[in-house]
Amino acid sequence: MKKALSILAIIGLVAFGTSNLIAQDAATPDTSQTEASADTAAEQAEAPAPVEKAPVEEKTEEAAPEVDKTFHQVIKEKFIEGGPSFMGIVLICLILGLAICIERIIYLNMAAPNSKKLLNEIESALQSGGVEAAKEVCRSTRGPVASIFYQGLDRMNEGIDVVEKSVISYGSVQMGLLEKNISWISLFIALAPMLGFMGTVIGMIDAFDAIEAAGDISPSLVAGGIKIALLTTVFGLIVAIILQIFYNYIVAKVDSIVNTMEDASISLVDLLIKHGANHK
Image (cartoon, rainbow, N blue to C red; front, side, top):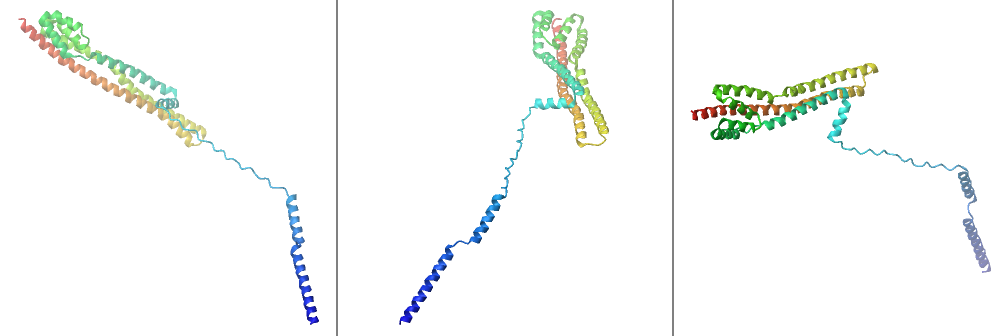
């Protein structure tokens, strides 16, 4: 019995000691791992810290906002690109042609007659005051028809044949006044595109001279030279188109006035024949 108790006491002591050793081993830190980690930390401390590069800010150039150019600015820019030599001559053709066109339009609109009203007034004057009263009506009326009527009435005493010839002759004079300076408009219409073509040919020659001097065909060089050369042709054609529109209007206006003059002259001769027959 005492042996059993002594054996149990020894087993208990051994178990208690073993548990204490295990506890101490678990509590004691691993010095080898600690030393290794310490060495690694020291190496990292001695090594120079990597320099972090500041992020480069990419400067993006903001595109300049495109400004819408007016029609006047575009025309001015293209005019300067075309060169002042031929472009200036084409511009002079436009200015002179438009000046003549405006003068003719104003003159023709003022000369447009109201032949029916004038014939009625002359007929009333012939019935009330005779030829002198009718001549006074023509003097106070503006326009080519009134001038023709005055010439016919002024020769009333010489016979109806003389009156008719006088009306026809003075009608030709008035027609010449209506068509005055129109030939200059047609000249500028023909001259403007020809000057443009001449500028184009000279510009092409200059472009080929530049290519020959450079010794190589550069697309930008060729395109720039051809562009400048063609601008004169474009402006010449634009001037011709503008003047042609005004020219056609003026010619149509002249034809209308001439037809009115012819009809009114025939009516005047008939009126004078009737007036002469009534006074016989």
